[in-house]
Length: 98
Image (cartoon, rainbow, N blue to C red):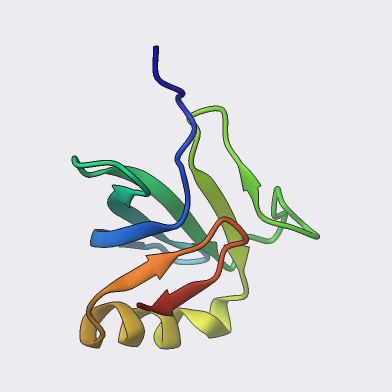
């Protein structure tokens, strides 16, 4: 029986962006460490006035990382996702080039 938790680091393969009036989200799909098929590996929420993870990112019941970020970081994260390849999401919420 396999775990429902993502094994990080996970290679980011695709993303979906939702931009609303007061809050934006990026849904990250990727392949976990030792995995072979894409799945949800993280969700980044920008500009949430009442963030769930005020002091730290955390693993949701669905097994993936939920990250609260200031709205000011949205352009930089989008730039990274659009232009860099081989991105990796670490368990601590860091996204880096591989």
